[in-house]
Amino acid sequence: MMEQPATPTAPTQLNNPTHHFSMRFSSTPRGARLARRLAAVRLDAWGYPYDSTAHTDVTLLVAELCANAIQHGHVPGRDFRLDLKAVTPTTLRIEVTDTRAERLPTQIQDTPLAERGRGLNIVATLASRWDWGYRPEGGPGKIVWAEYEATTTPASQAP
Image (cartoon, rainbow, N blue to C red; front, side):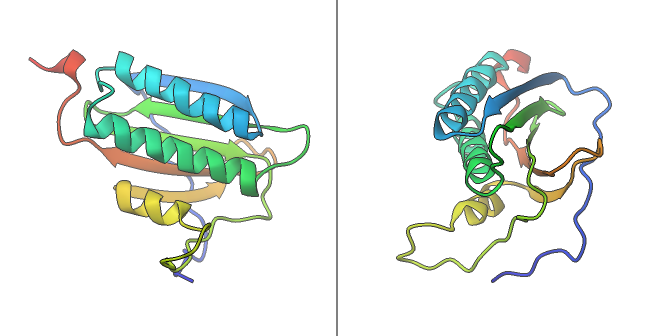
């Protein structure tokens, strides 16, 4: 098992993200799939085309964090929330909030033949930073977030 922070860090509040998408989804595989698809559409609209590395990587980050929310953060009758923000022209932030605070994210040692347990290793590899914290608004649950640094400016903002 890899080392986890002693206390979670609270996600930094962003004053004015250039783009912001937020939606609640049912805590089911169908909800996670819909979250991934809507995030992909939104990224394309923000200038990160479908065939770009940034689009592929961020869509994978969304998929992994949403899958973890339904697998480990599911509470019957409760949804999870996805927030996708373009913080700067090259920084994208993904936040996934679920309602289960007692099941905390843990990154495990990668086992080559394991069928499960690689999600946070993928997140750690693709994201420039990631962490988790308890919901800042005082509700039940936690928020897991990741930031991605794109190597190029989105097409919609290029000179």
